[in-house]
Length: 581
Image (cartoon, rainbow, N blue to C red; front, side, top):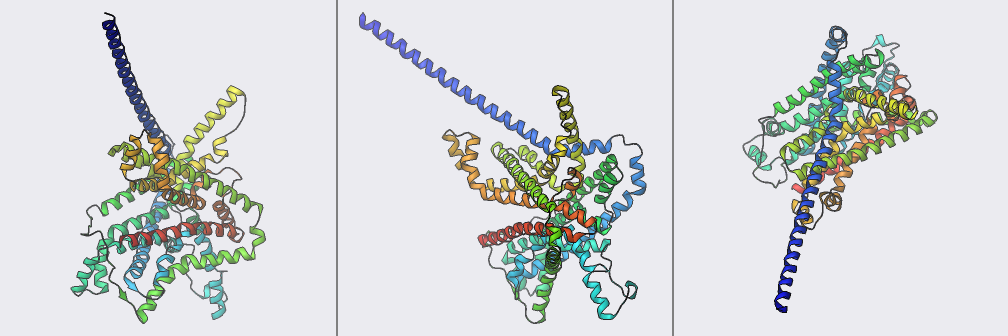
């Protein structure tokens, strides 16, 4: 009996232990489910907040434009919009055609032809991207104005005494703006078109040559149609940058939509009118994006092999070789060398005026804003890209990619849209602190530069998001799955595995954001606090006072910083082609 009682007691104990273990397992499963649900809700909350962060300026812009603004819209339709829309359309068409002409011709020469200096031109043709359009505009006027060295040399050589004695093209005109912008923006077309030429299958080109097609016929019948989607993309980027410009068009006296927004807001004190013109610009941007998609909707080109053999090349000799050298040299000379020489000369002869406390303070302001924007966009862009990766759902990816829409919106439009929500929040913070604690702080968001930082993050989020997405696509999901089976959370997996592997891509994206913030002018002009200058606004202010030589050192600093992404682009494009071959 004693043994039976002991066995029964042991059986009861084991049953209780099994029940406790099962209850513990169930509780652990419940905890994991709750944690998973919590992480999902947190992820969605962050996604909604980030999308609100990006889309709030556009929504507020439309609300302001569609609100009750009295008779502002009829006045704009009668006096401002017709001329501004026509001028903008003419400038976009001119810049688009000229950038395609320069970019496609130089891309074909350095890719398919052999001539002295070809390897130098392959990367040197990218250097005009280092100089903002407004700086090239200022230096062009310094060179080509009546008192500049070009016209002074003409008068000295031919004995002319006044401008009525000879004809010289007017640089401060719509034509001058088109030429200057094209000399800076053609690398967008050159970069995309050259990449396509390099990755075209050698088989199709060899077959065409076997059938007797010469270089010109091969270019127009085979290579150009295959590169058409890339040409359209490059031209669209160039036109968007042209639409975003404010410094060059104002200096040249060209009244585009961008200038009209600036003039209506600051000079006519009509924020509602500026919002309405900005909404017209937003329609132009959306129309441009639709045309870009529509123009290449049925153009899908594929090759039968992933390995690209060396492309057939044409050796140029005699006058053809010299023609190729001149064709590739002129854009570099006019778009980079001459403007840089003007900046170096002005900085050398006016170094006392340039090296001032204003210049040093502008450097510190630019560096601080650029560094903060680069870090913020890198963090937010990586978080969005990783969220789209772990959710692995089409609608999540589509929603996160909306964060890139800010890059297509001109800086002036973005500034108008940002001012309303930021000013509203700023006034609420100031009134709340005063009512609750009796502290008068003023408008801390607008006066501290946070509004500018907000604009930079929205406008350049596409670069960081694209860098994070591209880096994550190169990482096998098996590595993340292995980490998850070992008990790592998604955040721990991101920190310990993904971030170290995508660090080079993130650094490149952050560096591009850093450089673009240093050069950004439209949003900075409209959102900067009083007595706050960056390098870009310092150059703009001195040029507006017809004293550009006093801002030449600041312009030279912007150019020096802008060289960095050009070097990265040249190395990246060359390395990717080597890996393919």
